[in-house]
Image: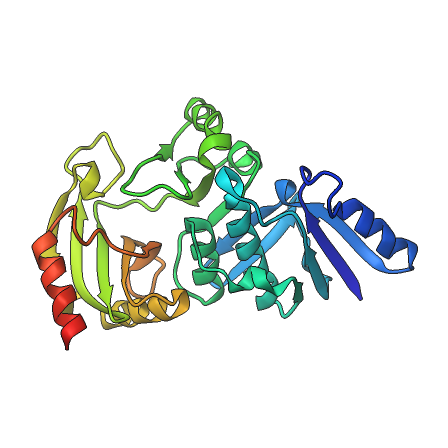
Length: 294
């Protein structure tokens, strides 16, 4: 049996993972030690992997032990990284110590993408690392860099050259960016779900050619669509996404994708879709109340 220990480089002497690793090895055990700060997570439709230096660290492991992940303040991002990592391990049927890392909820775009990927939901290919490795080594332009905890289109960049990459990389320690493939588009869809089912569809189209963002908060034009005009497979996928994320209320964002069987790829899942602000407040509130009181 091989045991993988994952710890933080900044944990100090309390529960030092290197000491625990050495104890296992000294007892004749087969073990490996890696650090959260070196981990790179990769998600695409149907699969997700955890790598160090592009090597899948879970390929030959039967048990993982997690240390130094339950942090607070701005370092609380470690919790979501641990959640995403544990989801990948559990999906590979690897025993997770401690399993409470799996008892969390998704708090950033990162773990949400991993959740959806391993369940086969169509998503843009996604990469993340706590360090700037993913940003620095991403070589195919253009691509999207977005802060994993941002909302309303903030801290979301279309990276088209080395200069722009360097500017965004300089912000990474503060913002924590993930990288996604860029899917060419002229609009996106916000599907509002209540009771775990799609109820409203907002088509968002940017009018400014200087931006790649379709968020109405960033000046895009919103238009309500008849929900029956959407492909039935896309509507079914919305209900499936609510089950995967355990959300009765959700704002699911989709972007056109040629490779998708229903024409769209899921960009993100918002826990509460701007009910009392933004575009179409009256319509959203009326639909919510109607759904609640049924």
